[in-house]
Amino acid sequence: MGPVNTNKGEGGFTIIETSIALVLKMIVSVGLAPLFVYATRYNSAAAIRAGALAIAQIKLEQLRATSFNSCVSSTETLSVGDPATGLQTYTVEMTVANTTTTLKNVTLVITPQARSTTGGQYGGTRGWMYGQVTIYTKRTAITPGPNLG
Image (tube, one colour):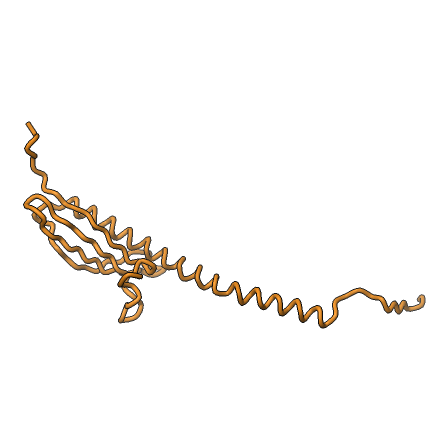
């Protein structure tokens, strides 16, 4: 065996440099944490809104299939999703207002039911962020107009 090399000029990081790097990494991580919370919240809200839109499409198709006189206000509860992974339940409120004898204004409000009993975050002006969908449409009677013939 040869002599041991005891070079005093070895390169490497000191404890000060390592500590500074860790502090900088922590500052960046703390700055990015709210971004991950925001992304998680709005990604799950998008899935809930997609379910609400699916329910809205179903209700609009049912509305088109019913007769004009059968189009009345109602409230019901519907669920969508895979039963194996969990269903999302929605409250569907359909408000029908007669404008004329041949025209009705229809408002559909689809609100996801909260996992809690209060469900306050799902309604109001900020409800859209959590999946509430409101659709305004009109329903007309199928009758010949004055220009037919």
